[in-house]
Image (cartoon, rainbow over all chains, first blue to last red; front, side, top):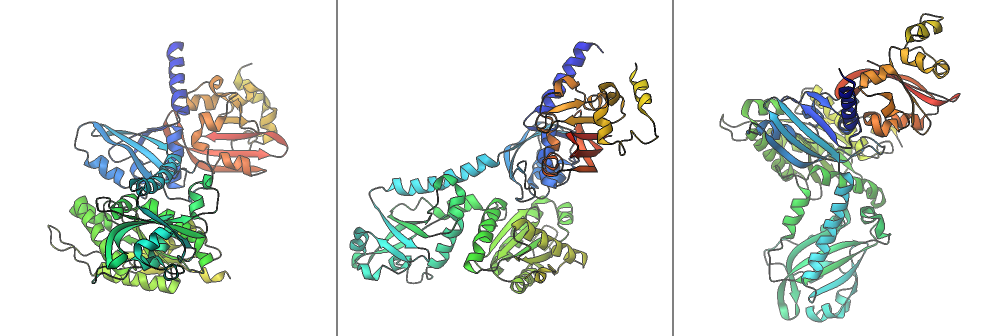
Length: 440
Length: 133
């Protein structure tokens, strides 16, 4: 070999070794043939081990759709997905290399060969999320700049400040408003359910903001359709970004804006941001956002917090036997069933594949009772398929926050251990994390 | 002097230069020829992570000449797959290490199972990473 081509080869090697983007080459089954160090580094975060040999297996937990996308791509070659975001479980690693969101582009070269690029976009995603929150603000404020009212609420959600204009408009005396909750302005339909204003405040505290629409009263017994935005007031420096929203809520600002258009569907926007598009459960990113916040704030509110991890039994067999389309229907049916069992304040999320989790504000006994109710409901499901009604079961693991288990990663790991003991014990049952009472 | 005779000249016991046995003081006292002659990869890093030693075996395994690697940050430029809590962070956090771990490197872009020996001692400013395929 000439020395020119030696030089060329070592330049090429250096290019690949130093490349700041992960590059992976794998076959249709996901077995990795080539990868550069950056790709290895990013994928090690997924598996939490140095051993990465299969692309799809590494993404099984947090990006199972990558396998489906590659296998479902019918063209002989071409781009399978472009800049697809994969939300990696938070808390796997503590060091700076612990990416939380990966961006993946996958290209099919032949039936037996794929290449993918991976890059860490955690920072961009966090920034986008902050921008989106700001956008909600602006669209609400600027859109009807000449027709909105602002109220101030205390930490418990009681009105502690109101402008004269709103009092005049509604015909309510100041005394009838101060110290009351926001539903003092509500004017629901006769058959409408009672407004859960406490729940809405709780959601605002959880997410930093809450947006809804509804009928509000105006003077003379009339009513008007209004949008309402509730935002956490934070005394902290706004520059610290999202974190400032997560800290203690010293109070809230509520913006009421009347509108004749109902095209701006607040609920739809929220769904888009926070749900798993297949099942309608919370998505992984939203779950961790909520969970970490609850963990930080729960103790101050004297709240206990537990998680119920759920894994559909033999799901791979369902996919293999009946196809992915039926597998998807099963996941949807299970989600709907579980959401029916859980309380609205519980958070039910799909973490990836056939893995789900419910976060519940109750102790271990309460969580295991909920898990048992979920188990029974799932086992009773009959899901229609071409081969007749399908029956499925799921296994569950419960864990609760304690002095030794305080991070969401640790809590989920506890619940996972309990879940696997349930699997080992024969599936279709509930496992309880042991040893949680050991710490005072 | 050929590298083989250099290695032979140093041997005074059967295991002294083994991957698992060699001591940091011996590594640090070796001439470049002697380090090159070792049958496993040897990477020596300054306390700031700059690559100071990159032996011939490692250069051959990785497919890059030492001239590209020496003088630059090893974990940031060449071995990003070890720039994590399992390897690079340990050199930062632990005052002394001598441990062998199973690992996978992307030598010539092929995922390759290796054994890594991480060595750091209070007596020696330079940290060593030994790589056995």
